[in-house]
Length: 257
Image 1 (tube, rainbow, N blue to C red):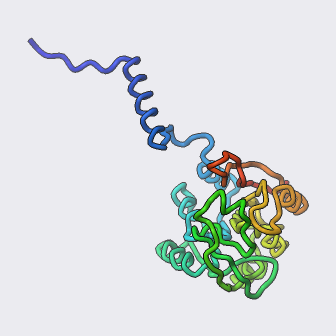
Image 2 (image 1 turned 180 degrees about the horizontal axis):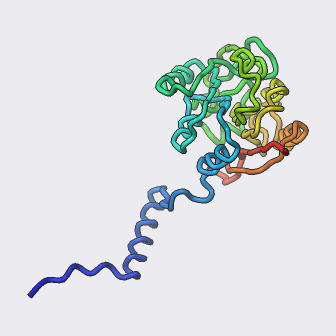
């Protein structure tokens, strides 16, 4: 007698298998979901860049290039200009960018002046800042405690772009990303001309003070509102895993016109 093909699992069996797999992954600290999920920030950003027609992303506080690498992973093919002041992080950043002809790097901090500035180096590198870190930050992320200090070049974004002949930006629909750990006010103060030309700004908004004399979310929202931008999106960011409190979010701002 001819054997028939094995019967496929019933809908109930499929459902139990799926639920069991999800439960196992959750116990291991993972979540399985259909791609792309609606709240995936990188996916939403890729749609926005395409809709804006962006051909230049200015990546301030690039660290080792995590943001730029994510842009490429999600399909962005325009130019990237990354700024990173920390020597060790910059070595890795430049190594990551060297095979990408559309990705340039600059070993400098950005702020409201041109010159030299002292930067407090965090143990995890990404939390480094010219501002003094407060206990609220290091308590929430013990690996972020300051381990040293370096003096590095600092420039105004307006002058840094002019030096690279990028002061005429409108036709590139630039996207400005700022990740400077409480130093956002100074970066914006050094970029009045640039802000007139960019299409969008993405930066951290702190809900509580994590660095000495840093601006909180309401001040940054007001500064960008005065520059002609509206808050168009918020994504969860740094949070305290001991208390569940959200300490920072990533804010997306679009030009009003």
